[in-house]
Image 1: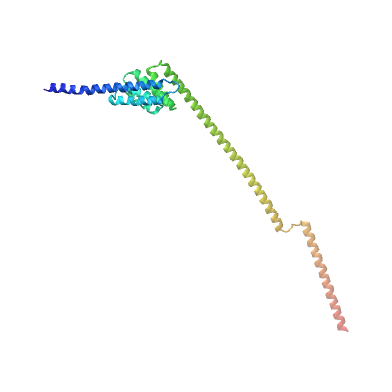
Image 2: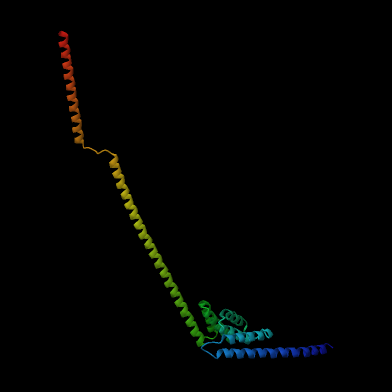
Length: 251
């Protein structure tokens, strides 16, 4: 009885599985056609066609999520639309899950390209090296690695030159500040000198003129002489008064 039930279940599921497989192939066919349409104009990629290819691949993966080929096609369609960040994540998932080393190498290579267009040079160099460890003779990976390393070197040089320019500007500012400080110091010194001159002039106005020792002695001698003359005059006057008194008494 159980055998009959199992057979009946298989028979019932088979049409659904067949329908899903047909839908999956249909979406993949549509995705591939849109992808090829996008590649026709190599000078200018048709991002609209790659967008339609992305939608078709996603529908196919809804029916068969573990299909690595459809995942790879989806990641490639994202890359062609310049959705580099999303494509890098998809290639990273593929690299972790695919069993074959050659497929891992391709995933690492495409991941390196996705990081390169984002100018994430360190990440791109790491993934190119991972790819070359598996397929060391791949010329495209070698070229892209060399290109990424050259860009990295140029970026470091630009950064160094920029830092040098900043240092030069900083030194110029410091020299300018030094010159300004010197000018300020000189200006302050001149101001101090002017203040000292004004102070001296004020003191000269306030203080009497100084005389020499010789002049002072001459002035004292003159005063003494005047005082002697005055005393002699007083004595003579007193003597005359006395004589006059005497004369008057006797008379």
